[in-house]
Length: 277
Image 1 (cartoon, rainbow, N blue to C red):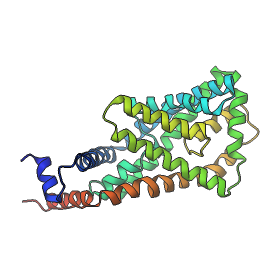
Image 2 (cartoon, rainbow, N blue to C red):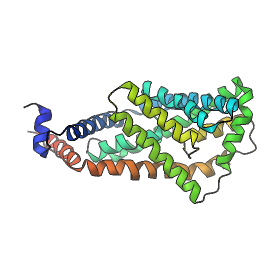
Image 3 (tube, rainbow, N blue to C red):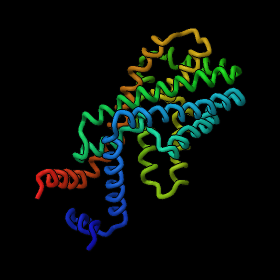
Image 4 (cartoon, rainbow, N blue to C red):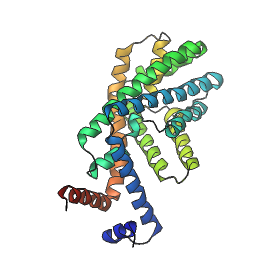
């Protein structure tokens, strides 16, 4: 009996393929989450900066298609280029840091302090990297300035009402679901499909996403928009909190409840390892 068989036997898991796949996916998520959470500050900031750069490439594609066609849905499909680049480049996006790292923390493979470091460092690095690239985009493609300002205005002028709350909550849920689909895919093609779905829903339906839409706003600011960074912050603070709520409460918590026995097994293994022989 191999190690995987022993784990299944300890949990009373049957040989049903669905149960095997759940256990395998859980182990993969915990392992990846622990690896991400044990990064040093330099690594956290570097991967976050790269993530901001790659998402900005998706924003460039979004603006180009929107300017050429006027279609938000086609622009959303174009934006998925950013998510594909993010996935293939193994970079880090703040709103992708809910399911995987949180699962590792619940499994006692990392601490809440490490989670806070990952979230804080990645968020700041994403914004800095995106801000820089959007300056380059506006300077390189001045014809996109007007569409950038028009696209960004809807966010900074949005009131904090029920619709805004729901759009931001849905954005956090959608991107965390995208992460879940990517981890459940068994091929690169499947992961790319998940990226396209996520990009289409987030950008095509104009959900309130703290990073994607901040980069649109930064582009507009670089282009001389009639609003400022205070207006961005007035939109950003509640959007990022609601993105977190959507990602944590809808997808992550449901996944943790479903994997309750697996979480307990992992925690027991960690506790036994700390006690030593």
